[in-house]
Image 1 (cartoon, rainbow, N blue to C red):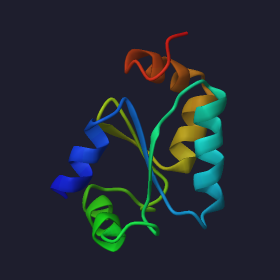
Image 2 (image 1 turned 180 degrees about the horizontal axis):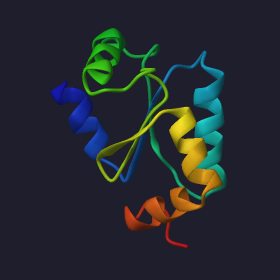
Image 3 (image 1 turned 90 degrees about the horizontal axis):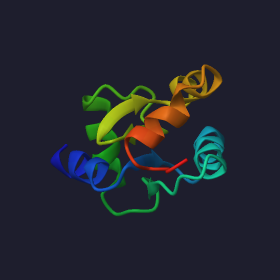
Image 4 (image 1 turned 90 degrees about the vertical axis):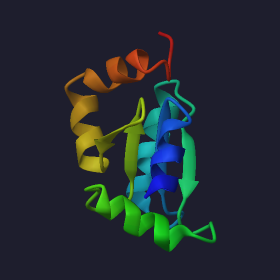
Length: 102
């Protein structure tokens, strides 16, 4: 769990994903379109990915991917991020965390 928390706090926006997850791809694209360059951690591409996925579940991430952290805080999964985007608050969260500057 400490490894996940450490990775989640290293950059303003961090997304834990799996390369085979279509919703993960959609969330990554949304961040790129908003001008953010999040740190991406593909759990199915790293040696300790299963442990990291277990740790994400321990932090309350359900489903475990995509798990989005902004400013070091868990913000939510795909449905949460889409809801924030629709109501206009996702961009402000990214600005506040200095993940984007406009």
